[in-house]
Image (cartoon, rainbow, N blue to C red):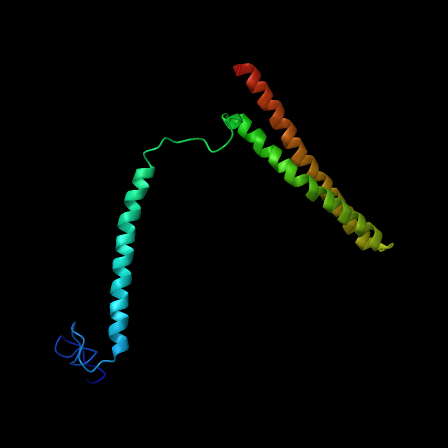
Length: 151
């Protein structure tokens, strides 16, 4: 076949021996690969069929809230989420206060390092106030809403 020839059904790119039947001259590993691919496809098809029927059987049960019953309202959920945030954030805040303290110690009079330590300490305090303030505000609003609604 020349460069500019367009392949036609009679002159395919793979030559005259290409067909759906495996020729007798091919190695045995090719037969094994094709057989293995057919087995894998049929296995996954069967697995998909059985797993799809199992999931519909499990779907017959009712839905249950995986969270505590105390998170049944939006204000209670927000207050609970902020409480978890505060519990996680307090040790991190304490760690960064210690780190900024070490930055003050290791500055040793270097004005640029002292400024960096001051900035770090101020940012830690601002972050702590934001987290604790959000928790306090959410708790106050949640308590007010609960009193107004009467739950």
